[in-house]
Image (cartoon, rainbow, N blue to C red; front, top):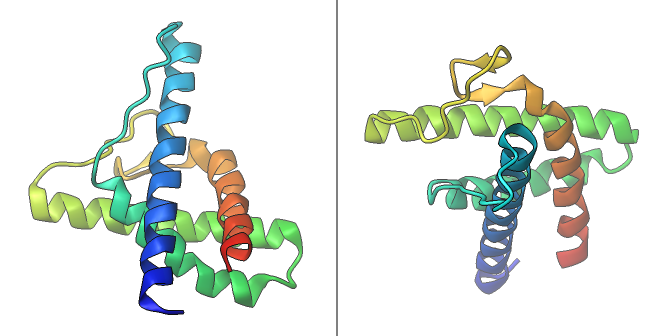
Length: 135
């Protein structure tokens, strides 16, 4: 992969992730609070997390392509949680602030939330699709 393709994929996945996060938070705000403005939100820290994380995901996608769909999905979720936890931990160390402090019963150290398992399962397959589409 040449440098231009590498940068394109990182930018593509960064914007895809941030865009989907904005859509999700807007829909979630409507469901939880009946906020009809559908105002989504994110933060700039997610750009490198989604960009580099999804690009790195490509290494696993190639290895797992012959595995059953549910096995791939489970592994994708584990990878996403690992990337999310490590990124959150690192950003908090650098800045002193938690960039996405999860709340609720299913969070782990406010860094990941197990309630998002179904969303990350689907997102893993979206990354897989775009990985092959862009290749």
